[in-house]
Every structure is written in structure tokens, then in C-alpha cells.
Image (cartoon, rainbow, N blue to C red; front, side, top):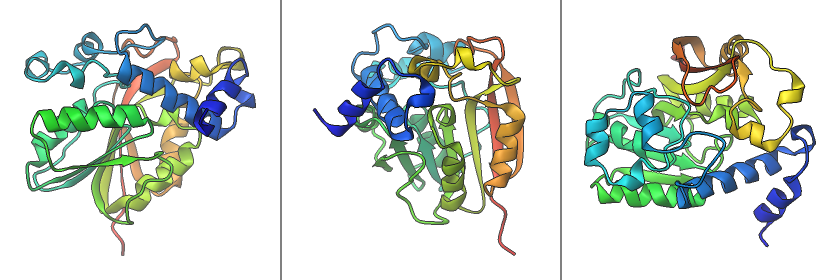
Amino acid sequence: MTDSHKMVAASSGRSLQELSPDEIKAAVAERYGLVAATPGQKFNFPVGRSFAESVGYDPSILDRLPPGIWESFTGAGNPQRYVDAQPGETVLDLGCGAGLDLYIYAKKVGPKGRLFGLDLSEPMLEKARRNLAAVGISNVEWLHASADAIPLPDNSVDLVTANGIYNLSPDKDAVMQEVSRVLKPGGRTIFAEIVLKSELPCEIRREIDDWFRCIGGALVQQDFLVRLERNGLSHPQILWMGRNARTGHELSLSAVIRAEKQTQP
């Protein structure tokens, strides 16, 4: 049994408050590995094409893609209307999943652009690698890593995007600091995330399954914006907010959020 499997086994039956950040990350990697391998399995969160279409992904685009690229889709929403990736830019997708968002960003940045797909789940990352190769996208580099330790140099990325990575990350401040570090001065981050209208009672945030329901680790929306600014990402703003199949609890919302890294004086 690997160390990761030992940590997942150790987390079984224990409360969220008892789990270490490494145990939570190991559980996340295992769960999303299952989403990659067996997307038709029943999970306590939405997975697949019908969910992607329900949050606004274009069915005509999905029709042109191999099923592997959308069958494991499980984002927080759809940031695509707001992600202003430009031809030739460098884009980092945190928690890239099976590659659906990356495919759309590849079309925006074009062959002269550069893409990085990062995921904590190795099976999911391998699935994304196969999917993008199958549709002829070759300007992607793959990073098997946690979002709180991005293996890229300082000031190297024009745009950092994500679709539901923060609520799954135990140390959200560390993720924000890493996003700020890798962004070029004047660069921006635009992403979809689950936020809360107000703080949830502890009794409904007890178990690791609550983490996967996007309420165990979600932040109140104003706290989220304050933390972004505190961690080096200025002018944070919510571009869109609404509900979808991921927002099962009445206090949860899907939001598209933008912030930027200030240019150095």
C-alpha cells in the first residue's frame, strides 16, 4: 500500500477537523482518480456531459470531441465566457481534469500560445494527456502537482484559470500565493468556484464527503475576495454568480471570479 493509499484509508470515518491537509489532498487525488477511471459511477457530485451542458458548455463543441474529454467533467461551473485568453499567451489551468477547459483555451491561445495543465490526480492527468493528443493539441505541458506548490518559475504565466480547485484545497491562502507568484506583473486569474452566502454550521461540514460536495472547504464570498487581495491578487471581483447542480446547499453559489497581479513600479 502506498503512502497516499494509507492516508486515504486513515481518513475513513474521521471528521474533517481530524484530518491533516495531506490526508485531505490524498483523498481528493483518489476520488478524482475514480472520476477519471469510472466516470459512470455514482458520486455525490455531478459528473459528465449533461452537467457540462447544464452550466453552458456548447453541445456542438462537445459533439466534436471524444467522450473521454467530457465524461469526467466535474467543475464548479463554467468560466469560459469570462476567460479572455489571447493568441500567443501562456495559460495555466489548475485542476485541469480530463482536459475540457484546456481544449477550449488551446483554441483561444492558438499554436503560438503555451498551456500548462496541472492536476493532483495522476489518472486524471494521464486521461487529459491522451484526450488532448487525440484532438491534435500539442502545445500543453503537464504538471502532476498540488495547486499550493506549482512547479513553475516566478512571473511566467499570463493567465491562471481553474474550475473548482479552491474548495478542494486545504490551504487556500497557499494556492493564492502560488497563483500570484507565477503570474507575470499585469497578469490575471479568472476562475469558477463555489462560494457561500454566509458561514455554514459545523454540523453539515463533518466528513470528507462534505468536502467533495463543495461545502466542506468552501469560503464565504467576501472572505474569498479579501483573501485574494491579501495574497497579492488585486482588484478581486465577482463577474457572475448563480446556481447549478454543484450548489446543492441553499447557502452555496457558483461564482466566476477575477483578480490581477499588479504591475511592478
